[in-house]
Image 1 (tube, rainbow, N blue to C red):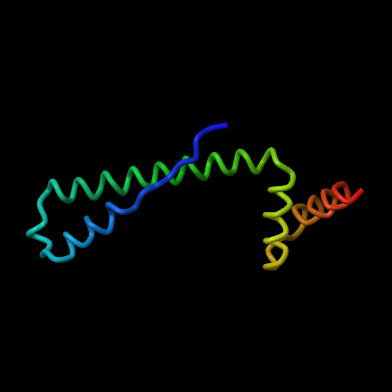
Image 2: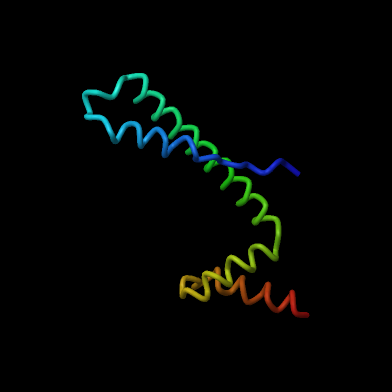
Length: 94
């Protein structure tokens, strides 16, 4: 099993706060680049985490069932997905 991905966002508020106190022309290209790189890294880590979670959920019937149950509770589970949910529910009970 892979290590959990922990995203520390403590750096982002600091960068944003430092930039918010300055006018656009006062922000150095280094600061802009730092903010851009940090945002890109966060996006990559979030995408990686979502991929790992999706892969895990795809192979785990209980996780799929919980996701579908949440969708059903919000009226978002319909058609073929609803049919699969019902079949899995019957299999899990029986």
